[in-house]
Image 1: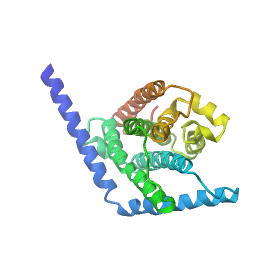
Image 2: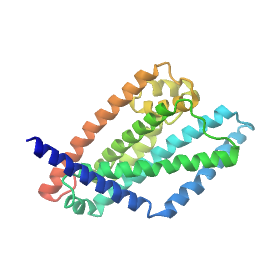
Image 3: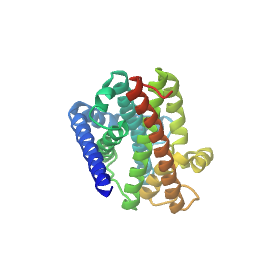
Image 4: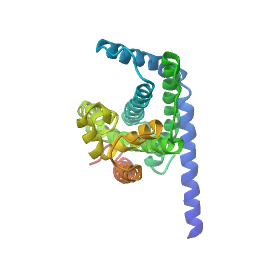
Length: 272
């Protein structure tokens, strides 16, 4: 019995490693996408600067610029995971690529997690592009007060977005029409996902305080800037984030299992 468990574990690790390597090869085989990220980051900065100057804000303090940087990274993560990673799964479903994947791996969830690990490495380029842009445009460098907490927050945020993106993709594939779910997600996530700093208004602070999916991004800003954004201890914020990620992991695993079983049994994509 122990031998069979070890064999199963080794097989899962081998399949996961294969999917991670395959994902990295595909992602880094598109240098144009990497260049687009590097080029568009300064353009977004120009947009925000012109908007602020339109409201009469001519100078920005160093702390505000650091806040902008991490807020921009939060939006970049959200955009990359939902529309990049989630959209990729949707394309695989529509183009019958998942059927081919199932012939190579025992569980679609392994494929999703493997590609998610590869994609999380790829999303670090967003942070590098933003850091370079802020240095070129404003002459500031990233300053992090708590590096370990920042790394933990990025891991939690990436895991959370991986799982949310997978649920989004499963629902889109099931409905065969993505505009309804996409419209809901693109308005709901920025509001509830902690992407907007609590300093924006007291209403945003209330939402951030009570939204479980907001905490990884709040922790990210708190770790980088060194001051509490919410009147909640960091340990509780981390605990809430871990509970949320585990809950999403269970929900995602159940949905993908239903998806996988139906596809293997009937050759149909869907959840019911």
